Length: 435
Image (cartoon, rainbow, N blue to C red; front, side):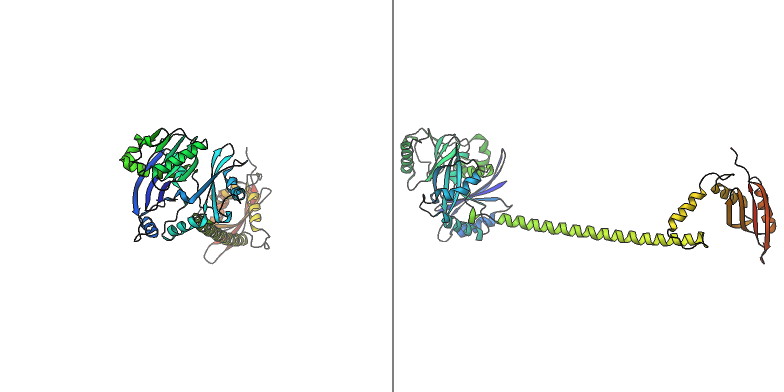
């Protein structure tokens, strides 16, 4: 996932793009935009939108001075439910009416949460500015809430970049505040207040440009500067770039881990993604409907073609039936009757063999001088044949050719035709079947 992290400060906007996924990390580049009367925040947002491509997840970091906090104890272990009950829990205890605030929370463990809230109008104004510029943020937060994700950050420490201070305990953010004016007095005063409250961490970590001139001896805690880890040296190249962008990298990591406070909730919820998803679902549903319609049309055409073929086949079978049985009345089921006749023909032996075998032998015996046999009856071993021969001699030759098949055979009436051909009848008895 690519994250475009934008940090809005009083005099500039810092932008950096990171690719974060599991243990992999990539850095695509960073840019700094100065805020002036000639180039207000809206103009900077337009330049960022124009230079962005690939649809990264936009994370907007605002000043921590816009956010208030308080530690609360709730008998809940579901962060979503905690967000739902926070307005009722804090109603009357904060100066801001809960209807005008947007809330989130960070778990501290053992039923304790760091409740965070901000004025809706403050955040909504900045969101509208970036939305109109074409660079709407999906997440709105403050960078100090993610400093526990700084590279090689101690699990228990106070962390400051000169503009804010965050307290990390057991690798969780437990306190964060903005610093006004010079960094050293603000850090010192905050550490003194933490000491009075009994929450003073064991060490102080400094990073960033504003903290570059601070000396470790200026503070009552063991102080060290956040060093660039060797694995990140190929990405940031210089320690100066690392110090400038380490906070934004921590924001990207926290967002990827799903623990970054996000104030795009309730009326400020990000809906552009939902709208895009709905549009994709509508397109998908429309394509599915078209596919189903085409499937039904295809099946309908196939059914129509099959029905036409079946009608044509039935017509052909009826015509064949009338040719086979011209004297029979129209049958209820021509196919069934034809099948029944075929079964009769290929059925059990008939004294001299199956009827189909007898017809085959008749066809073999007729030779070329018999023009055709147009009627044959076989019943109980008695055979009667009507045919058409070229001459009376051809009919006698056919009779002689049937001698191996017939026990008795007689040539019946022979009728001559003007062209010399004759019609004849032949009757006889088949020889007994031989085993």
